[in-house]
Length: 170
Image (cartoon, rainbow, N blue to C red):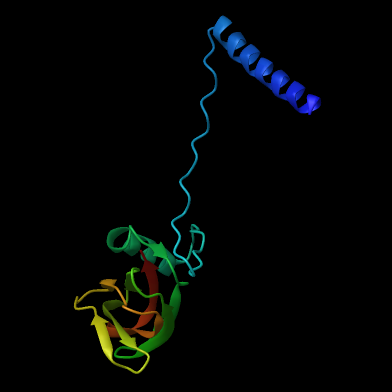
């Protein structure tokens, strides 16, 4: 116990000495390094660490996310496919229930002029769909009442080439 009190006293003296030395030399103490806020978390959902990628589709997705889902965290990997015009690719995702809401963002390569994204229950019932006519498709917010399996379908509506879709949550 005496040793612990002595260590606390020496630590206090060292801090006083260090601050006093900085003041005598007119040197400001070094500012504390900024601490990044903790990454947002959603119970039961792993949040991948954002990475800078040289993949053109990942770069397109990062730009689309900044515009359409900046306030949400990634809750899926970047799912990619190469599609002929009119073809679709479906992916099954598990979504948490209330109070969480998801955004679904799909992007297409330069060779596509219209990409569509649809969200359906596991039984096929459509719950949300994109209605834009361009190479970025967005379902900006879907808040499932209960957790469950859903199908996210991306379609090359006009043109052919690589598409990617990703889910973001808040």
